[in-house]
Length: 324
Ligand code: ADP
Ligand code: MG
Image (cartoon, rainbow, N blue to C red; front, side):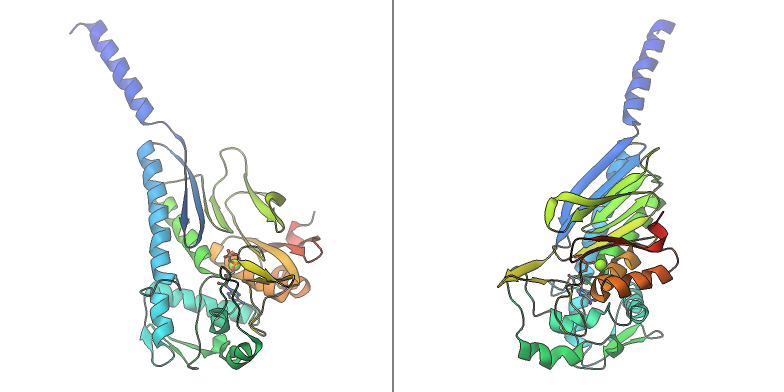
């Protein structure tokens, strides 16, 4: 081959190779854990991009299989079936999440309580079903996180009240987002976003500009109430619009007071901004239950966390850290 031919072969190879190496945004949507999952990453190659998207979706599905109350074989279902009678040995991951849940119950004076499900499991928002007053009254005593006994050396859990059920709907998505972000970081992703329903966490910025994360209008899904420019941070939103039905003009939604076994009405939407999606998720549910004054007061006392609250008159409120 003469030099000119070699040069043109090299040129073709270089072009082909650099097309292969094209750094770009890669994104994907999927329906997992009863919600919309969205992942967006800046990757150096299509292979890196594809692997990153697949890793996150696989992680979401793994956690769904472990923590869904709707899957009979999930670890959560197994715990609910047995832990009211005897200690159940559980996975390290489940043990740690139950331990965190109990700690957050203490921090929030019981507003966040995964045993809400002792009554909560009788609501079916898709079928407009709710428990009657007598049923709520008979099961209310089974809502109390203090009935969850975790034994660290044995990695086991037992409920010291036989009617206790737990549900991780207020924390599992945040946990899944945190795990997904760790996976992406280990794959070398420097700019990325993972969203599971109302829980979002970001790696870096959007290459030279912040990520824009919206808080939707609780009464109009096409409108944003507020947009937050964020980077290297996370935000979770809890609202009375995610799962609900209406009966006689009353909205029965999925965030329940552990004291009453019923929906709370002080606010319409709570967003928590902080470094951990697991905590943001649980704290957004807790502040929703605590209401505006008590909830915002608590967030103002926790270092590194901020809140945006829309009250039941649609007025916006911000924690001290967000006020300029
Ligand atoms: P979503 O992203 O689904 O809107 P939220 O973070 O707003 O989730 O949490 C709502 C979910 O939390 C409910 O669907 C339920 O599974 C669970 N939950 C409801 N009330 C409580 C409570 N008081 N403590 C802990 N979890 C709760
Ligand atoms: Mg939450």
